[in-house]
Length: 468
Image 1 (spheres, rainbow, N blue to C red):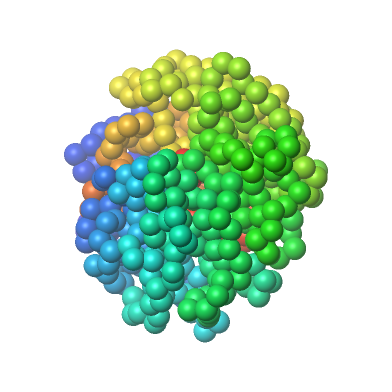
Image 2 (spheres, helix red, strand yellow):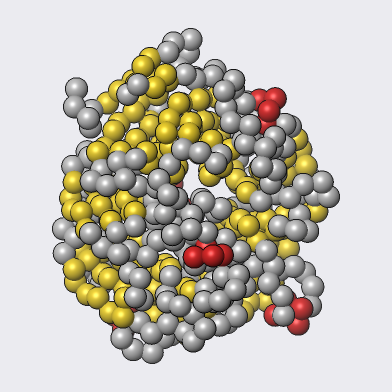
């Protein structure tokens, strides 16, 4: 069987050697299928660059774009290379607060049909503030425009394709940090993609940005246009909305920089119109959930631990709405806890008590909710923290590890790539991309694909270590 073939990793009472590793799993419901795609370069080893999935060639299947300093690779769904660019793509060479955006594990690329030709384009920034637009199937360059960056910044560092004018994904957000001091992405400008060489649609120099990563965008209120999310939320026109974080005077907000580690967007309260924004704050240990239409849904302080990283999903069917899992900041011996949709803590445990033997005592990182089984209840995917290590699926409510895959994972990504609406685990490991799939029958095959959700598409195209 060739390198792009399928391997079966059996997980109930069976150990199978896979590429020199022991594929051991805990209480897994069935087999795991692995596919290996050979890359032309190493990805994620120095936490710079990572991957996204998108339909590059228009055949309806999800393909792969992988980035690393000096490299961008496009690979077809079956693993065949479409193109490999030796390009100085803008990915962070360290933490964003020291090296600028987009931060650890951020891919630094976007894929969308931005010119209306019914074919997708690849967009990215290089290190000199030049926006490159290429044919996503062939890699052929269609346009390269250098966009002046704001005074006080070093260069444009991050880009996101958005819909600001109700005309579709034909607008572009550019973001940059301050060149000196603790770097935070306060500079944001919006452009029509067909007029990148002209004036911006709007520009903002005091955006309330995340501490370790780029802005997030999604249509929060369902009007067909994107809002721009940080610890403040901008409307599609770039104007501050009536909501701000925390619920104190706007004068204080404008004069402060809140240390938000993680931001997630989800429909936590289906009983309320619109999407919610979840923010986890360092220092004061706040977890805030906001509904853009109606203001703060709940506000909670955990007096014991700092939340740092989170995952939002349907983790407990006994509680209405979605749950928010929080990871404590401890370098070792993590103590996670879970909020229900109303802000009540419904679960707490020690990671040391639930992790399998041999798992790092540093805990988990890059924690992502995953539709793996096809049932209503979601699991969470994660990798071993502070190492190119193993991968797991666990129950956020109990912490029980459902699947433990020995790996050398440099970075982790979760998305529906098989096409049956369930999600797969994607791992960048050196010069290989590993795709793990659940081959068991899908108990709910008629569910709509997750890609039909606009905020899902946005989240899978623009992510990093702190907000995967």
